[in-house]
Length: 210
Image (cartoon, rainbow, N blue to C red; front, side, top):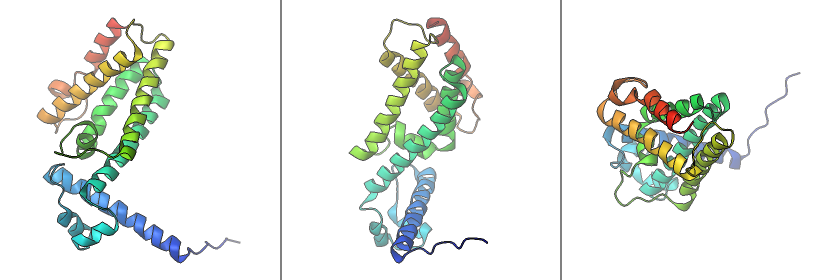
């Protein structure tokens, strides 16, 4: 006999409805940022897209920066999940490093508004909150651990510190992504002046660090 689903309490229903509206607001905010620019997040336009008046947004977010913080946290969690999937599949091999650099570009192409919010400084005067920055620090910890493992297993062989190696990889993958998005955002990963450079960059690193 099929078990009946437990009915939600009034408080649980309110929380569910609240969470659904928060998700809708954030999705609308992402749409506006993609269309009008990350720095030009218009609260009235967000409200219109979710079917409410602008003052009602303050029932969910205290101000515009709170929306940016929520998107910053969401974007970091999405990228960390993407990175974890690549690490689980390829490990800290040279192929894994190449896939991670490609994965950064893929994330940037698929989520350009989040990429800019997370890894650039497109919003004058905006600083992520301490909670949002905690996600960023967690990502950096993951990157350091990945590089330390690659060095411990002999994949990367260098007298440089794990921190320096991590920073070098970050500079390379961000540089490729930034140039690709600025010049040829319509082209897929692996193509174009800059998107095609990933395997070449990894080959240079491999020769230097093996």
